Image 1 (tube, rainbow, N blue to C red):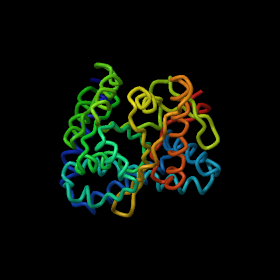
Image 2: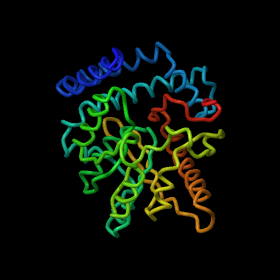
Image 3: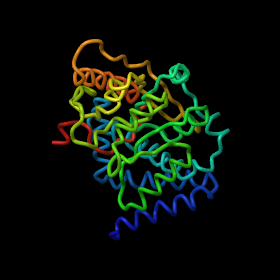
Image 4: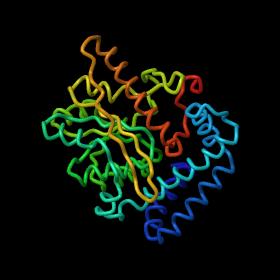
Length: 296
């Protein structure tokens, strides 16, 4: 383990050990200060965030409107991390009562009928909280985790999400996650996948906010392979609470090859993500490259 990796692991360990014991108002103030300090430094991640928000809003990336929006987004992003450290002690009642979800009957009805559900969502709001809510209302979920460095940090995140009731599969370095996810879907389970950034460099090209972006084809491919329902979900913060919308199911095209079906369904997924992001741009925590123009 190198010095940088060791420092990262130690920082997260300290966060889980200390932040959950802090008075909530003090913790919120601390993380807002961290957000503002990071925003003022205007580093690589914040600059990419502003390029992304520029595409969403149509405003100049270096203009005052996007600069003000990026500050709100960094505060939202740091709130996600604050809640990551506090979620294990938040309690079921608060997790459930604070979550305001529309369209969730689609999940319940499909599972009740024995049909698997692929929930696909962007990096919005607090998707861990949404997952914990889903577990508490009776739908234990399966998801994948990007393998982090060092291994001890990856294992820490695995343990955190498993403590919330998730079944976690490593994205790489183990058995085929696609095959296991397909099996869970055929069992009538819920699979949740964050799907607004391609980690494989082999994703599906889609139109997103007027530009060509690359999204993972996994959610659509799983739906095509298993017949599961593909449900886009977008998330945001509502004051001290959490909001979510389960969009209408993306139907599988009747005609076309498997690849053509995956392409069409991933484009429809991008369209639903765009709708949600446009409504709540301050809660889209995308500090990485998404559009092909930036990737190249």
